[in-house]
Image (cartoon, rainbow, N blue to C red; front, side, top):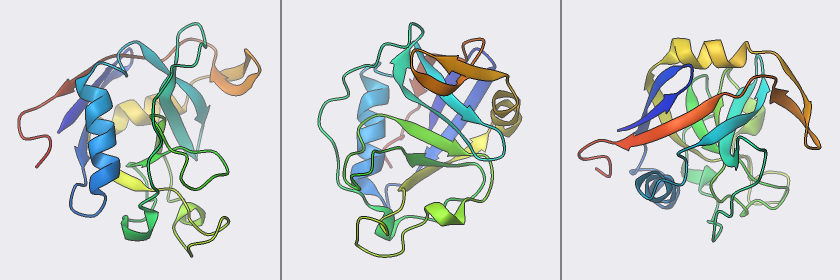
Length: 168
């Protein structure tokens, strides 16, 4: 289990190594090496998702390293409180950015191994702190540093704690 200690409270996440081993391991590696510490939820859309894992409080993008293969074809569906990898239009471009679904987003699920059909890989789920997720999705947002849907007041991932047996 992983705990995101945020400026709004704690969110505990259970990773899905059984269905999405590469994606879960990628997230765990970033968590263990402190990559997410001090990053923000930089994109928040109420009724859709909260996205983080890529920008610091100055809206400077962090270098995530190598990208990973999309495992959405083996993943659980994008349901409320599941955690999925963000990516560009390239289905296999996920690096460090992730999002927590705040609704059942079935349109993000895998449909086919085509550019349009890959979907977004769910690699975990929130097991506690749902009220924190809900509080974050309700923050005021605006434009900042060329991005939209950025919280007006930073929502900081202060620290990520990796608990024993997080990779089991």
